[in-house]
Length: 317
Figure 1 (cartoon, rainbow, N blue to C red):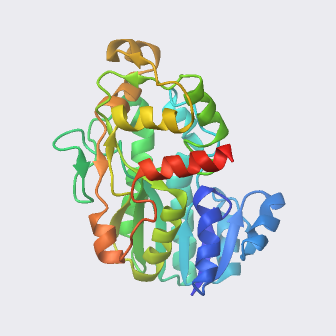
Figure 2: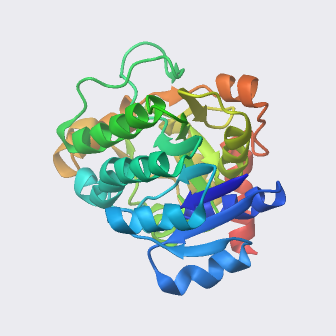
């Protein structure tokens, strides 16, 4: 299969591209930065420079690649550690999930693409009611905190646009919180914040999160390209959703840091914003049962406990 991987040098793209090539696919990978084209070549892909927010640039890249499938992994998430101004921090990513998605879908339709896979997120977007672990059928939050509204609207957009796209098989992957070498909570800025105890345990710490090692996210994406059902959402998360009161101290311990400070919810709301209190005390996690059942996927890191320790050991080494 000929595949256009949009966002080939991002966190998922760097792990995904060589897996697609190893599976026998021909991959054209895009990047906004011309200096990153050599990385795409080293990973086994054909590099294309593309601005996902420029319609003409997207059209040129898709025509050049002549793909059977498009994988949308374009984000602007690298190096993010300040979540106090959430929607402002995610502004570029939100545009890529709205404008970028629409431009890619339009170009894919013009080029006769048959499959389209896009990235979404599994976790805080779920409605804060009922049990702590949700399936793909459960509703998203209808009343998110103000600081999360634009980001949630962008996630709704990409999910609805892709899952209901006409003329092609649209599939959405809701990834859990990423981690891995120099990724997510193991990026240098995030490690520094945990080490300096600047990521507190807020309130009762009963917000539930789902995690996914970046390599497992990439492996699941290959299976979604090859086996995913049209119009389907898949939670791509590990086997052990957990509340913040469990995973945050474990992360600090894995990094050799002191335990996180405890901050009452009222104080955190005043200092950092109500949205962070919600994420740390009310968020819901996701079940991976559908992805395991329908894609035949099994994460190599079934628990963040194992994964955190493995990545931390690699960092120390």
